[in-house]
Image 1 (tube, one colour):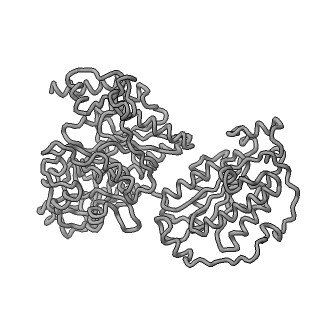
Image 2: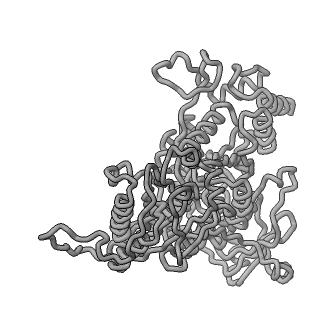
Length: 624
């Protein structure tokens, strides 16, 4: 927000607009654009339609205008709607750096801003103008500049009592004004004229940033600026409470299909909304879009890079083909209903070649695909009950909706997610700590880490989930990560080891939880080739693909910095090639060997209690 240094109380001005921004230049002619607003709206942003407008935030210094405006900008851009914030202090360092705080200069400041905002709006952007703009007359004129060219203008009063603004006083300006060091400071010895009929009032003394964002978005949706579907709602597939008894009774009368544990994990993924907006297992049209484009294309580009499909045998297809619905049975229980099923051929070799880039039958997930049914069945899924595994870890299996609620309770203004299927060492922790620091430096006040281990099927030589969760708990217990700004939860998806294709799935699933930053590491979702032992995927491609992948606009990718053990500092440190000899790269294989043989790693490589958990696991493995 712009400050009010060295200004004088503004003289009462005539409320006519006759001389406001009076044209002085002569021999100038307006040139009409060849591109219409509608045409521009087709190509600006990822959502069709012209959305140009100005949202004018006005209020006292310290009311929260800048905080709200930057948050709205981020929200809209992340949802495919182009937006730009014009901030008072920023503008006075460039376009208006030749203006002071006299009444005339303040009037000219707002006039220029209104004209610039109009140009941004005319270009098809939602322009957020964040200025004290204390006088009604100036704001009325800003509105008229827009209305004269048919552009929407929304005045938003960011209303916080003076005493609250003084308590915040981030820049110490109120303190200086009270001490007489600044004269004519708005709200102290210079008048602020409250808006007479704003489109919206934000009570920032009682509403949090997220609530303010939602109020502005509601306004823009009401005015047809923002499409209603721009807010990414989680689509859960559980039977509604008021229809649950009827659905359970129905399930008992339907033909049944037995599913395995991996199928059941995919049922959980679908039921909890991780694969929003899927209505169930993929139908052929969705499957083809996923397989060929890594996206769903109906209703906008939505990243979904892995087929979420249900294989069935020819015998099951013959039995169920023609049914309007059938029950899915796991562990002797009818857990879900698949309605309006659609059967189509499971071309396994083509699927594997496209999804994994190989058809090697020694690849553990490809092996499962090749041994599965020759048909796929898609349809609308109705899951009967919340899925629990009764393994002592269900309290960590938070759904996307529950995670969203958790982040809101924590007043998170940024959520950065870290996906992992391995134990956490101090190199991982270093990256997460560094990401938290960088977000604070960017102006976020309460970044929250989502430490999100994968909890579905993994290959036999991976550390089991129960041991990983014990190890993660030890990392938090030792303070390597801060429990106050960390949420540990389990992601229910099976692991496919499909490299850059799968990492898109991992990323977009966290997007559904409300995460807006995603940390991607070296060789994500990769593994050695089962026959050659070489990396199945180029280790840097996962991160590169994520930065280019379509349909991930609500997330910013945080590339993994290379960390290694610094022998001089005796801790994990970001690798510096100039001092290569100082670093020791401790591979996962070497780490596992040390744990099996009862050796301790170098001091500072992993939290001692966390290492003890890992060593205990490998000890029990040897005894078995």
